[in-house]
Image (cartoon, rainbow, N blue to C red; front, side, top):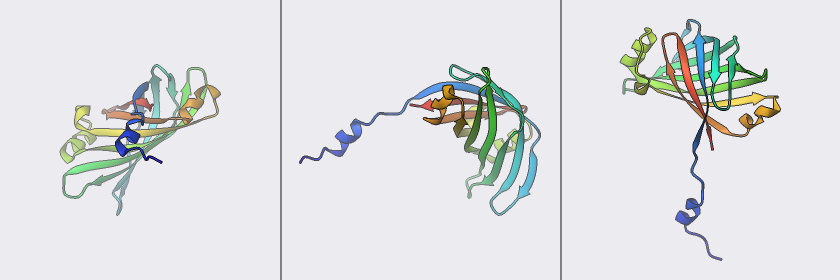
Amino acid sequence: MTVPSACAAFAALPSPTLEHVADFSFRLAPVTEVGPSALGNRRVIPILDGEVRGPRLQGRILPGGADFQLVRRDAGDGIIVADIEARYVLETTGGARIYIVNAGLRSGPADLIARLGAGETIDPGLIYFRTAPRFETAAPEYGWLMQHLFVATGARHPDRVEMRYFQVN
């Protein structure tokens, strides 16, 4: 029996590609500061509503969701990291409801994160903001959302968060 070389075996694996699914825009209520703990500064940001527009998903974000964050300073390098877990419901233009859990990280230099927190507009290219959304729905036409992985990139603005969602193929 001949064992294929590692290079040949790995060469046959497909490389992932990204397919744009939709752009999400969230309107947020003021931050609720829970306060510092041994793990970092806990905060909750209620999601008021939002819009979803794209080639594969369209609709609106229903009120009642929230973004739960733990903000921490990484050891010695001046980087502030927000561990993010947002939970919300998308109602499609056809009336289907999709529950979304979107977990990830937003990080950047302490001075830029402070300016962002003070309501300034910061170039999104200077802040790392990536998430991995997961979907749950009873709507058969959106079952594909529970059969694939997704990634998103985001930007925090003074009055909203904007995110672009991609399916990993």
